[in-house]
Length: 101
Image (cartoon, rainbow, N blue to C red; front, top):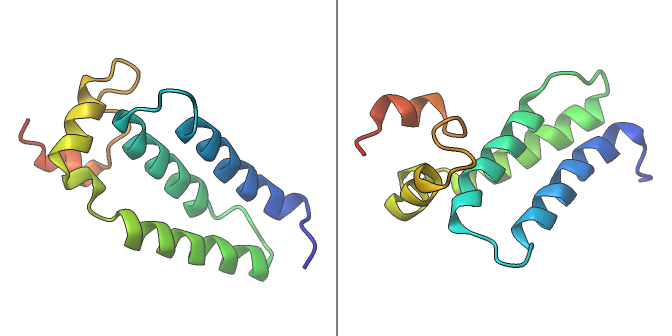
């Protein structure tokens, strides 16, 4: 299967997240914002191609299963809250409603 423009935008989002995560001196504070940004990108229903829609759904399911509890980790949550770059804007609505910090 060739990579076309429609799938390359999805791949580009993962490439950018990988670059940020592998940057010299990455921080625990970037995990939640990166995962949530990727999930938001994958949830966009802007495709009319069934193959791209299926790929996005499978990637979203994989991310969700691997990182479903990352916002519940005190270490990840505190690091993200204390990081001046993101604060609370990168958390899911569910986490914000249940935040006890």
